[in-house]
Length: 232
Image 1 (cartoon, rainbow, N blue to C red):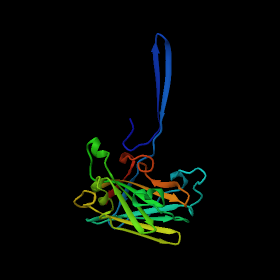
Image 2: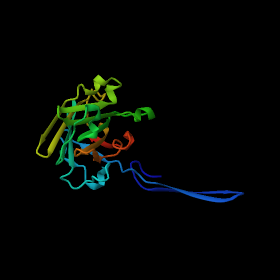
Image 3: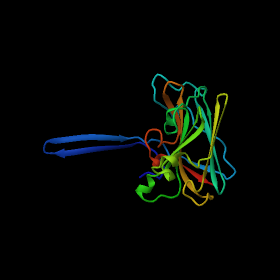
Image 4: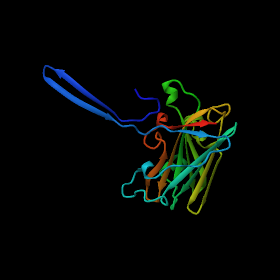
């Protein structure tokens, strides 16, 4: 038995004996990563870095992550009773996001996975809202799936206050989410949510890879792999 939230290798060895002889097999399981717990003060928290190469996932083998000038990111969170605000600052020497909103994940963009409330059933635990935000040639755009968007494409772009500003090689993304947007009455101290972040990188020749804070967005869609934030 391992404590909740622990991450450790798990090896299983099997021996099967029959009249025909003895067969042996082994299985090795490795965790995707330990779930982190992050406290968010009402007045705002200090910036949290995404890390470096250890949190980089490559997609184009001949376009590796070169340095923090190539891609680096940090984020911070703050909240009031009415809204949760996420600010992501991305250092990127080349910005390319010439895609329609539904495909912005292919370019320089930020993907946010959020699961609010206290889901109990397996079906509820699999549900979450994902936002993709990016600075396109037409300006800042947001694309929402899950949550209140449902299957109505018109809802994917509504009611998501967003600001994206790029100066030099720094792009600042600010996304404000109301309690209503996340299906809550208000944000209160003690509330907890699950959160995962992905910063995509495209230098104009395809999505080369991404930095991530928590798993559960970039490879597969699984809120069980998100980190946890706790409002203080």
